[in-house]
Image 1 (tube, rainbow, N blue to C red):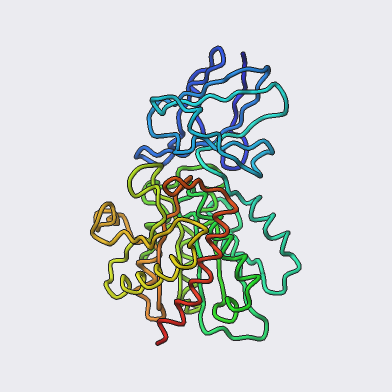
Image 2: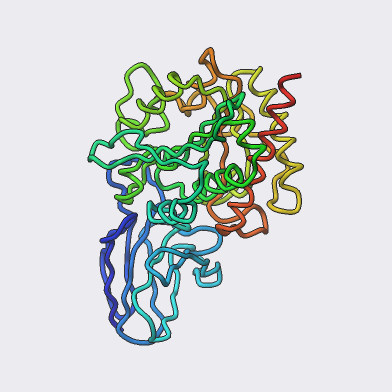
Length: 371
């Protein structure tokens, strides 16, 4: 049984070491990330019906719900499930029915510029939404800046949303889209916040299919200092200063599985005053998310697990830079698992609904900290 594998599409990443008799031995393409990471995405075409195995040369490359798969060129996704993964966790089997075209496999559910374009097209007639260009990347790509505001209303606060400082962290962008959806449909959000959003903080990495996390000499999420090396981060800092943005939320995904990686949580900030505010916001969000997404108000406090000073030696993340600015009132960083929270399996609609919960909780929170 023969197959053909390629990565010639947005987000593609894989190294093919060998193909033999219905089995491919593969590896992730680390590129400029020196430490092992786990992002991969590839397209496969099958010449005949049968079972095909994909075997990674290293462990910890397949997530808790197995690979995600797309049958429509990466637009929609579903999980193949853990049953297709062998006991070692290093390989998975795909049963091809002999019908249809190429199939795209990924370690998570992709969110590429095509998904953002579909969102923008669906709301092209909205009087509240505007697409601008934040900057151009090192490779000349446009970095989208979305704004949502209520015409004729001066909102008391400004909120910045970001995702993909680590470009492989796809599920976080579905949450960001959900926040935007709520802002478009809920006038109370717009009366409270003028919303700014940068869905792809590492646009080149998103499209090229890089790991992004830990890239040399440092990644985008460690670039918030006096001399940023990436156009996107420099432009985000400039935007926050020029607009005096007082609320910000940076969305991430954690490691691939295990402790601290299969639950939604806030990353506790280093400032005690901001930690207390994060606890208040987390409680509002817990109430909003009840019955929608499992979130119990978790915060990974600073100084615990991986959230210590040693993790930030290479540089400062956006939140830590933002909360030290004189115009800032609240900054947070949140981790959204790639595939699940406990026994609950994630998919895009659920993550968008969780984003809506965040938007509603942010309204209540902004009212609370005024008191």
